Image 1: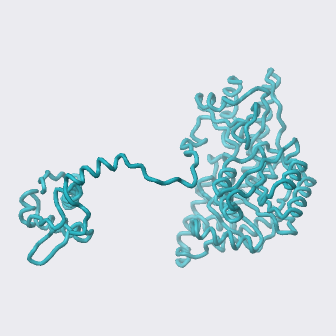
Image 2: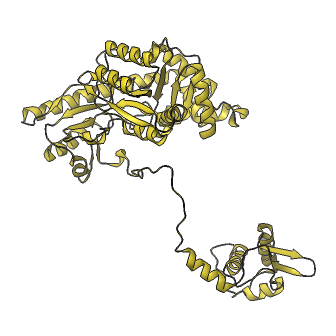
Image 3: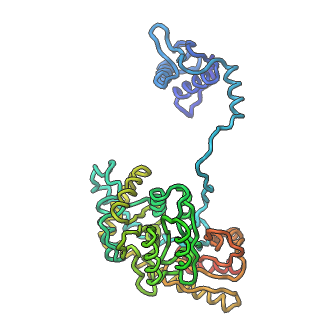
Length: 479
């Protein structure tokens, strides 16, 4: 039975009529095989054109709600599982008490929808300054990519990355990082790369060694793939060789994940001697090294050490890097380098998960790199970040002279300071957030709980010196 409820002007009338008929069927007012009034009667009932009624009825037939038979008109489809309005009402009420019998294989914390950049003062350690990004310059390369795009490449091809971009990346890695590679895999950011690696290597319960103070998103990706994480101790020079050796002797470890340049979060750069010792240990125990080189470009005091992957005779280093610090995180442009058999498996796994990256952005980035404008932007931003690094050091020294008990080393590179406040800072992030300041404290990075947290990570790249001083004053007032 149809009520003839008036139709409004905000939506097409044939859609409103179809919806009323669907509701009547769902609620049991119209039963399977019930005839509908003729199109003429429906038009009179609703005060609409007969052709509008016919459009609604024909759409319902196409969707399977109604059947149309010659000389019988329109009827409710007999295959619909509806018996009576009373039955439907009881079923609906009863279903509200039913709890689905299932268990999620993985539960993860809900993401923080308020990003670090939304704060008035942001000391996020990996936040690039986007106020001076060459948008007009990059827009030209986007436009060129749209005009010159090869149509077949818009389809399901080149899932490992556009050849033009891969060629530019290979040239750049050879020149800027002394890293030779025959091939590489373009990913949607380094986070996807880390997830792919863990998914390819780890069976549930198998071990990954990580820096005890490390990068939480990587740890969460590994655990999501079933890994058991083992924290390796660190000292003033970085990852402890003795701690790593002891863990490798005690436990079957499949991967070692580390950030040897500008360690996250402590900013320590592993010396050549430690890198060689770590590599030798991993080679002896058959452990692959996942080298996350997330901000290689920004090194100020001297040339940055070449990646561990640049000297990898045993083929055990999987090198991961990203454009998030060079461009912006929203570009979702990362890549990884590995030996051929490992790269083949990671590439096949990426096809299952996410067939390919944004083709237009890849082509635009390739053009930007080929033009030389990319590296000019890098040089410009490196100088700017070095100036801000010096400004942060001066500001912290000022607070030292003013009586604040602060201990820190000026980093050789990167985008942040690691500062010991010599007091508990567990609640500082929440207190600072209430004053519009984003700052991360030591407890955000520890793999395992500690009795006391005293360090804060102060990013200096993402905001101008004036805002940095204003925000730092707020943090110091809380300390």
